[in-house]
Amino acid sequence: MAEKKLNALGANAAFQLADVVKTRPQFGAITPRWVARFLEFKGLDAGIYRVNRVVEGDTPLDALCSRDPRKVDIPQGYIEYQTKPREYHLSNISTILNVDTRVSDVYSAPYDQIGEQIALAIESLQERQESQLINNDDYGLLKNVADSQRIKPRNGAPTPDDLDELLAKVWKQPSYFLAHPRAIAAFQRECTRRGVPPPTAEIAGGVFTLWRGIPLIPTDKLFVDGLKTPKSQSGKTNILLVRTGETKRGVIGLYQAGLPGEQARGLSVRFRGIDDNGVASYLLSLYCSAAILAEDALAVLEDVEVGEYFNYDRTRK
Image (tube, one colour):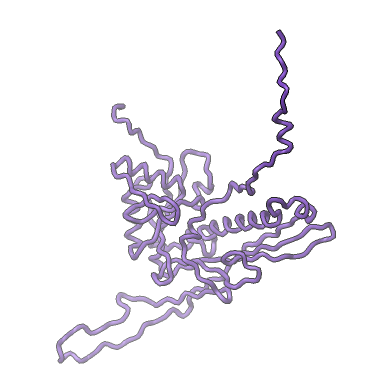
């Protein structure tokens, strides 16, 4: 017996009259960018930041500590400054964005095409800024760790003992550890193996692993074997411990304040005009740097192995 055909409007035809709920463009490369969010920033007027340091000896200045009135020879002296202090110059991260005006005129509902293009371009520049704050050859944190503040892990994988050694290097009000997510996972495995799983805490809208009360902040800009997303199960990376803040003589971010066309901290968007083909052009520029105010504000655990795993099934031999 032949099947009776359904006499009703089909879904494909009905779809032509239906509204479709759309999202804004989803950019898979966007990360939380915790480094820039947790780092204290200072705005500059002329793009240069000079770090004046004192030439330190065993004691900054001798002083008299006595209640004996016969001791009247009060020590004399002064504090010496560096005659050639380091100056940090802002780095420029730029790109030019082109938008066909015909496309932006016709296809800008419900979302403005120019606005969405600029928003994604800003995300790209800020991702690059996050990487530069860590890896830049001039001002990046990894490149500016003092030799006395560099240590190696005892056994390859990051252990609680290794992070304690970092804390001994940056013991004056440390702010946070920075590590690749796989390095944090490797540390958590070591803690689990030792029976000391670290606690977690919610900070600034994120949940972070803590060690000795200091959060481990994840960032894929601390590469594993030079890669953000390594394919191999094993690999080596670095873990940083940072003290941030100008008042704490820590690490601070730098940016140019008061830019024309400012859209975000140190980032401007400027319209460059429309060419004969109707293509509108926009210049996006981001000015940034970072300064380390004291050597003990930063330490690094180098060559950390992230690929060590353990068999937790005690019944197996």
